[in-house]
Length: 456
Image 1 (tube, one colour):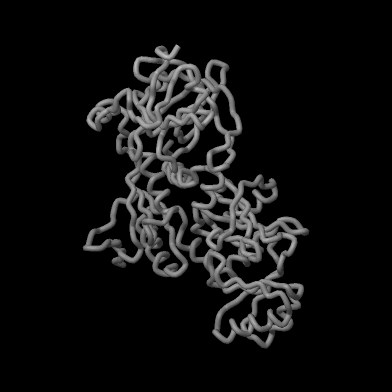
Image 2 (image 1 turned 90 degrees about the vertical axis):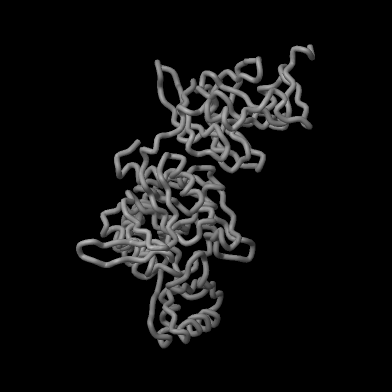
């Protein structure tokens, strides 16, 4: 019995002939029940009256240019719980695996494993009765050299027929920015990180230009993704406008970003589109504090700085006295503030809908830490997957359209009066929503650019 079994180490190279994958490194994990393969752009389709699924994979770790387009018969769609406790619906395929000289059929789930160390996980169901594992060893059946890998995948290298896309932002190490760069490269585009502070421009009617550190002229970009932090809205939007003057496609226009950063103006735009918000008051003088508090239904109430972001400059005043103190303190600093009714029944929760190109691509519920009323992830709030109602989706799409944003994070709160819109963010973060939903939101942003150029 033993001599018929293949002995594997904790990591091995295997192949999937029917999928056109000559070799891929797998983590051999007898603790995992199901085998899983990294896949992106997963889409079911019908072939000869049968259910199939097509998907792309990057078979080599840390190489996002090599892509293999695969398709396989669809066996099932089931809920799988990951080692981190996250549950997701995954497509299941059956195909032959080849390890060394042995070959047999296995079932595999398809999932985005970008955050994992291996493109392939070989679980115990696929090994049962065929394999023995020596966890102290690795690559008992051999390991290809980097030259051999290049040779095997030479025809899979994606031609650089993609677009030239610039990410206009401040911090290349930020999760959202790294993911957008990766997603663009993974889809075959030439990605450039453009630090806002290192760009400068030439205003000229005939030859407008944008220069980068050292005098390099930034020309021939197809598209720009502006990710402008609030502290540099003015300059970031000026640069975005300059790219627009150069006839470069921008994922969010300078005008849309500017108006989204003005909380009062954006609320007025939303109300003009018939979108309900919590009752809100705005005044320029502290003399009107008393009536302002009454206007929004009294205490408790929320006081918001117009320039605040990520929950900063947002205060819950639980009593009328506290509200007066906070309002007057802000006013003494000449700060512009909104006062807003406090939706107690929301219980420290709100919904973030991520809208791209007029469609809600993902939604999460954010829940505040105990003792905190702000649900922002940056303030320690937790994110969980939620099914949004048709009305909530409609509000999110309508809000993004009212603000003229192609990419927007729309925050909604559930009240006894129905869903109310809190805020629309023009540079929504990806970490919380990608982590909770396991969806490739960065890839959806790149797809929105491709759609404009009628690619894919």
